Image (cartoon, rainbow over all chains, first blue to last red; front, top):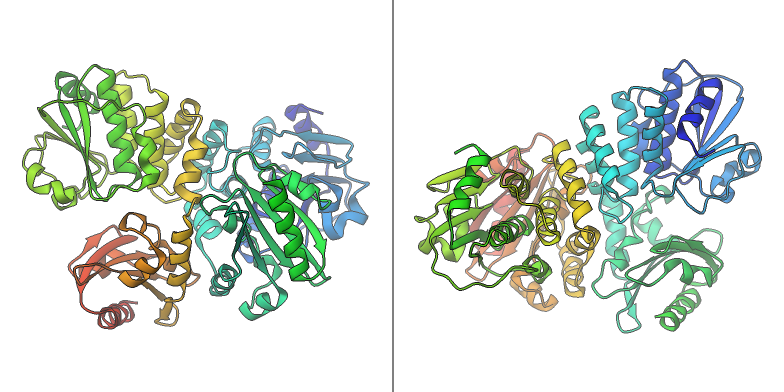
Length: 313
Length: 313
């Protein structure tokens, strides 16, 4: 179903709604889910958000105004979940019972009774904003905070190439409704815990260049995480470090996991495709941001990645 | 003169115009100056930009489309220059002959025949944008790139509290005219030279907390700058590091200068006033960002600052 008005009409008919986020949820999946939950509750419906994996503390405020309600679910909506595997611990229970899928990933592979995918939207938050208009719901401050958070986090605060003039027009309207937009930005983009800063210092010491400076690699180990005193929910943001360096086309971040694998995040500049690179290891993603998982010890996996990088560049 | 239309009419009568930026120019003073220069040249006038101090290489593109013209100056405009001393090496020659001052600093102390100060504008670039409308000049891609750069750099890419809905509406229009807005953001906010990264690693090692973590201090010395191989024009951005840390209310950055002084940059959070803090040392600025200069050796100056911080917090 490719008409947001019809999606709105459909939702108006439903009740007892569960809204699913993706695993290790970020600002967009959470902001979109809580905004939608608030919208549905404002219509007198029962609704709740179901997350998967650790949720970073800084997102707690997104729950403001959401009522905790008891009910048996009748309808399931997923927001910003690009593939069934990204449901994480909820995959088994939910992947075959999703009624409505709302997302901005063009590659979305969720099977649902109804879907609304808009790959031109910079964030799923943009779609939720448009949906509020189609449903005739006036945005409250809490709804606007959620949607602003979704859009600003997914666009790097309007910096990334997915931003459109439309993104800015929506954000301008949201700013007028949510006077705390600046606190949100500070919390999302500036504040670092002392532990996170300590980890970053350690990560800088792992920095290694190869392919004449066109590839840069950093890594974290479980030991480093433990020494810095950092949980899995605070590990985001590191992947942007190697790509920032002048002349680097492929920035690779390796993160040791407890199951003996490394989670690899790849960011690329210019014409280099991060998703092509990750496809070599069974992964995928967007052109400029992709990921994969590789089993092995630090040195072996590092060599594998650096060899592949130099072959590609 | 507080009417931008009249300012536009005034400029239309003038020719052979020099446009002054502030010392060690940033994206807003340069973007505003080159945009205005392009606007005046598009009307068939002669105009040039006069800078002071080193200009970072990343700003070179702002000169795109600007014609180098020979002429004797008849009219002088300053843009984004808040005080005569900020003219740097141009102060003696120009401070008494400024015809028109355009700025967004409420504290502006430039003496000029005509002035247009709009403290509500997030950047001087916003004023230049409005001026183009008042003058009936259609923005070219080069003009839009300059203005976008001014606005995005002065607002931290629409993240800081000076951003308004109006800022976003202007940026939305500029994005449509300057398709390279994303490259601009990458260049302004992401790209770091290897040398800069090296300096940051060294700076992290100087990090010191005091007043139960409410104050954080970092410093750079001439020796560190030399070891990292970094010029004065690449030193910006460090001052935001200490304030980012969770719980820090006062973030202090000390930078050793060749004349035996330290340039102190202070950033504050919440109710703490950076300008009150700097006033104790004869400096000043905005509430959340201020500066001063202190003579002395590293340890003495550091102790002075940390003592004052704990007294204030």
